Image 1 (tube, rainbow, N blue to C red):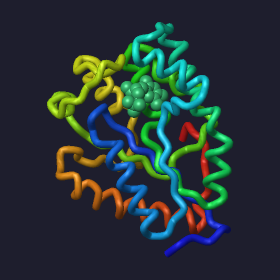
Image 2 (image 1 turned 30 degrees about the vertical axis):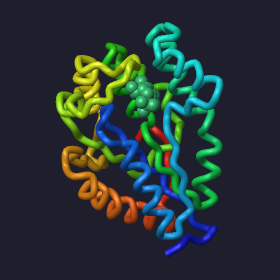
Image 3 (image 1 turned 90 degrees about the vertical axis):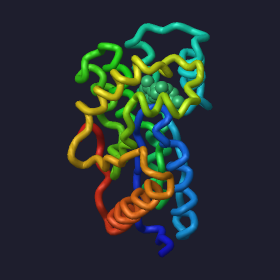
Length: 212
Ligand code: FDM
């Protein structure tokens, strides 16, 4: 176990609708990998701590209004401003568990009617995840879980569209996990796959860029 300083960390992304369980599974993965002695951090996008992140946060809480293209580019800029730190962390052996990434960017904006290719373009050149989990849940089931807040996108009608956009977006490399299973069952499935991925990265799997 443990990790030597020569080997790189893994970029692991969790995607899914609101209330699909991404956030609790992300923190469980963090605890799990830490417990095995790995260097690991939990990140999330949007990262609301930066200036760009604060503009995004204000938009999401309906305190400001922005054109759909503009907010899309801000979400993307919010990832770009973290790219070099992300690369440094990975190259120095830290695994990153990331709660939402470029796929949220494309799914949510294309659900508003922006073109897929247009949405993907600003993501090109960001780091490509080594592993993407999709916590799969029907929008109606997610809504039943309650806890939709007052944020912009937290409406069933819109989540249905986002769900469809995720369907178009995912490829064979994604790990689709049934998000309606008991929390511990999901956790076990993620643990196995994450460990495999962390090992592959330690053994020298190269870092890649989006969009691939
Ligand atoms: N979201 C998130 C986007 O629309 N684009 C993005 O690039 C990202 C990362 O922001 F509704 C949406 C998804 C969600 C909202 O996310 C805030 P969190 O996970 O609730 O903070």
